Length: 332
Image 1 (tube, rainbow, N blue to C red):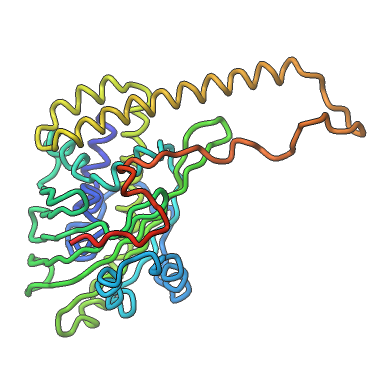
Image 2 (image 1 turned 180 degrees about the horizontal axis):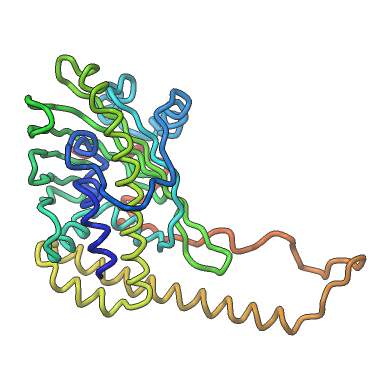
């Protein structure tokens, strides 16, 4: 818990809340992470990265209404940033749950007295958020599938960094890939692309002024946010009963979200135990099997490929919201 507090104290809105994926990521002046650890990986704002990000968005799966919202921001962003790809120890179902219900993290931090961020759920796929420092935003999940989430956000900022109100729109594209580590532990490789469009007159000048600060802040806060999610997932896998006790104190959560959080904690613990058991059994079988001598044929059924390449994942949304090849519903 102390380690979690240290991570929270380093950041601001983005690392506090995962609200995010949003406009506030780039405008809140307090977002600079004060940490003794150097930034190990940097994101990219290059044209090539932006083109790759655009190609990764399945516009053909979206409704015309959703495309009409996204197009102006995607085609002419004031600021673009591709966050550094990170691989963390995390149960993929838990990761997906947190991406879709960021208020779980906010409630935990509020319980610890470590944030002024607030989230008000507006529906299954939409919420409003405030950071307590001049930023407010309205977020909606345009597309949510097993490995891809697209958030659209409208927001504004009025604070000490800039002497006028800023209005903007933001698109956040989150990719996640489940995998297994060498020792069988659950991993998630996550990446995130941010397209921000400021609607103010002189937006380009504003962007030039704040962009150098913004992108480094965004990179580091993104990494710190993933570290926290990793710690939360590990706690759930090792001690789901503690997560159940914690959930009981998160009074601001809707009951169905709180119950799902507890359920996922126990399920992730079961999956971890099964992986450990399977790995132990594999080790026993390997130690008792005959050695392969160079020059001999490979035993029948053996393969040089590691079969543990992917962790099977079940969607955490209801079946009606799982990817089906049909256009995603527009979130109003």
